[in-house]
Length: 248
Image (tube, rainbow, N blue to C red; front, side, top):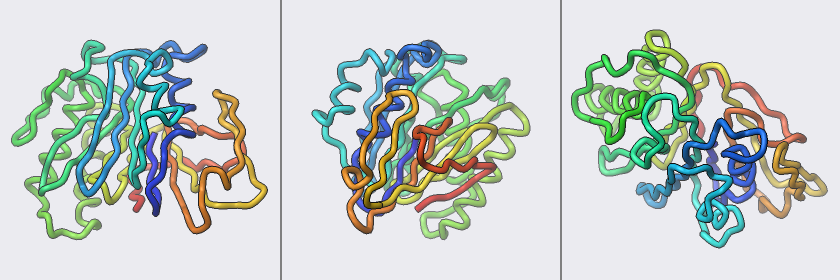
């Protein structure tokens, strides 16, 4: 799950759906961990646990607002362990520092054989194919870009790296951010919708079955993009992401 907004926003509504899918009834296959990252002034805070989000007291606090989060960029993840044990080091999102800011990454998919791909500057802390892919992309940015490059150049390098990994190793749906932009690469199942203030308009979470009026979520002039592996709501239009798309 990814959120990027023109104002600092709370993840509570979308995170409610994500948490339900993280080990709730009918979603037991996503029970191996959960995490949430958000940005303030180029620095990322990350909370994550190798337990089902649906059964986590900390995740429940975030969902109800007892753990307050307000940020322009938020990335969340629920994990099905395919490579690497269900431990904190293997739980998404992952974080690295480069050019004076934090970069965060979360991935869905399986990348068979990626551990044979050489890494140079960035090394994983855990043992997942996902973090290995993140380190490879960060290496490409480190050696092929500079802090002064425009986002178009950053996008080009991320796109080249992602297409290379996808063509060689498998499925690569991911979200990545440095706190200003949200890079989303769709390789099979990744969707987005735009949400803004609309009077007398309500939306309903698909699995959590929570209906809310949009004015309770958004103020006038506030526009957010929400990204997820599968659509989160019934009334909104969700569009498939194919390849790399940059949101800001």
